[in-house]
Image 1 (spheres, one colour):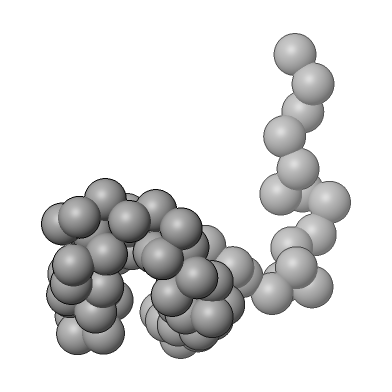
Image 2 (cartoon, rainbow, N blue to C red):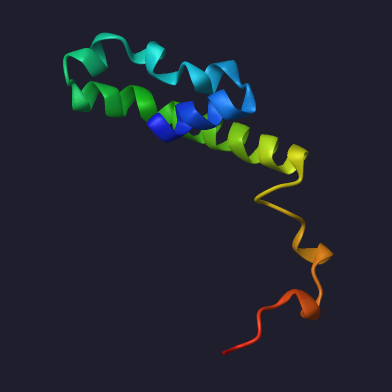
Length: 76
């Protein structure tokens, strides 16, 4: 969760930046089963947000067709 929030802060994505706020007492009471139940539906949305942002910025998930054989590392 801290990674999601850190990415949100760095990217300026409010929903990710304040992700833990949505879970309230589930976190403060260490209700791991309840947290898991609430977290599962959000996890795909958050993953999609991170990927969409990274693609928009042109980092992390570049189009693999943009590479050619010269981009591969040579074995050492």
